[in-house]
Length: 265
Length: 246
Image 1 (cartoon, rainbow over the protein chains, first blue to last red):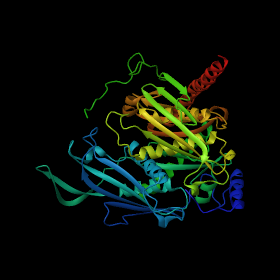
Image 2 (image 1 turned 135 degrees about the vertical axis):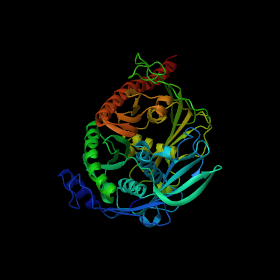
Image 3 (image 1 turned 90 degrees about the vertical axis):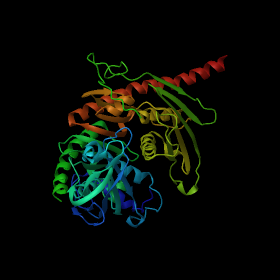
Image 4 (image 1 turned 30 degrees about the vertical axis):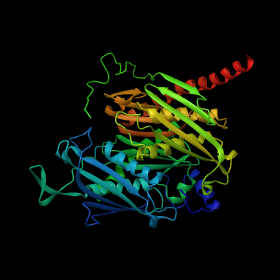
């Protein structure tokens, strides 16, 4: 991805500060930026949420449709996550089909929701092998100022918790809509915590300029019981095994704090 | 597709569906320099996986605007043949393949002295001919050898191996059934001389303690695979030497 150029001096400053345990925006190494969550922002969607993490802004909309299940899991609903890095969000985003960064973002969010079994997909089956509900999670990045992964994962969770499904009845294989709504069955609350490695130190929630300086990135998603349910390393650098294990411990603590904000949200 | 549910993936003697011990790798066969046109190539068989990796470059980059003024750009395409899996896979790149291409690229790059070849590209092509679980790791193991075979200056080889949780037990190098029906899968790539983890992913559900054990287990697997890689590279040069002496 082509980013706007950060002045070299600033890059150096960011790296120097981090090695002294400080950050350019005054945060500690394991502090998140201010988090704001707004739900139900798009009336047409079955669920939606807008998350602001510092200046990073992500909108997630949930649409629910009826379709065919996958042949290997005929009795379960389907979860689909897609991410759009829309050009209005950053000078580095270009119109066109999702590139590798968008695909990776969607798949990390997907993995967190899927592996923690956050959605009770078995309850979304209408007729085994024939008809199930499909939950579309569409991540829409509105402003890119770093750490899209955590913002998107939290927005997705907040949107799922906000999702209402229409009541229905099955008559002769057809779905008949009944009045009223029930909430989507959400059973777990996966939260992603992303680390950047700068000057051999780990920081959480990197903002854009820190992402441009970082050697590597590591995302750890934990479920509500503190189990790790998804991981993704990114970037051209590397982590030592000690750093990975240290990150896992921090991720568990941080996710707990964030989860409270999202679930209450 | 008929749904097959394997009853138990680990039997009472602690043996797995393919008869392996919990911490035992599948049989690995590695070959270097298998393709005529490529600048470097390698072939791996790991269990039933059969994968080819080929590298072209460093060479002039096309399109030119992708060139980096200070280093070579590594590009990578991980692709599965339509006949490599049970049900035919469309040859168009799936989202999974796009993601794997990216993580494999990012896992390989730290080993290469890309700064030696500014304004060029190094193109890596990986074709999975037959898949049996753990293809990203096997691909990476072969890709690293292909780079070495191409004579590209490298800090070290990178070896990759997965560990995971199956039937509540932690196991090394999951095969297809274990991957699909198991509880967790953690692929990891490791550069021995730097103690560097360059690829790390996981799906499933594990506790913090299990996670620590899985990471250590996968690193141990990588150590063994690294030995196979070195032997495969040596075997090629020994063969060349014998040819010259004749």
